[in-house]
Image (cartoon, rainbow, N blue to C red; front, side):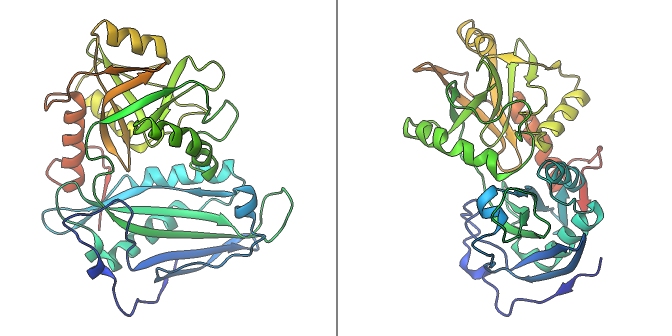
Length: 350
């Protein structure tokens, strides 16, 4: 893939306070763009970050035919760029594309485009603790057609944002038993806008009650926990790490997958199975729930301090440096920033 490059004449980097980075507030100088038409990807280029123009009749605007990904790049102590699990994100992007009747984007193009974009915008990658460059691949349908059918023309973009912590402290979550994020046979496992649109209103209601996020339950009975708004979920009960299984309604999180691999390395007792709401609440009451945390690319690992259920808040044990969530966070950070050996070959170095 040959990528044409047009450099931005004047960088916007001086607008960013790198000592106080807010997640996603500023965009780096450049973005990658490719187009799909007549059955093929073409016109690969890196251009200055700017607004895009689409028809008011664009398929994406009316029927939500759009997908995206999220991954991060880091700088190690030698000022070298490290990208975490880029191949896993490329595969997941194409799983989403197939579900949404969109063309797959070749994995080798995906990784090459990110690599060349990061090299050009290297100065935008922060190099302080708990910071990174968030990478957002995005595909949209372009057909100016009012009618429900898959589009034939698409644009693929990648843009990046300096990022600090998504959550600055342990989070307060509410178990949602009325609204549904995803159902069996739906698109819950894909990173498409529809999943997040469905979550906006119930999440807004929860935030009015001072919760940071929701714990989504199964859409049929609301008896089993699945995932949170921005994260997969983990619970530690009786020294065993629990997480819900993958399926139509649970995203195959890259951080989730990484934690399970690290847990195996450390011989931590782990169960991937259905987890009932009753089990969570009873384990809190019986002092058997030792900790709970969310895991995702944006949030990395977010300890949970409070779980709300049926108009009652249940306080969880205080997060400590010996918690499994702390152990996993330290291991993942060490691998990403280069202070711990990458035994799983998760890092791409540029």
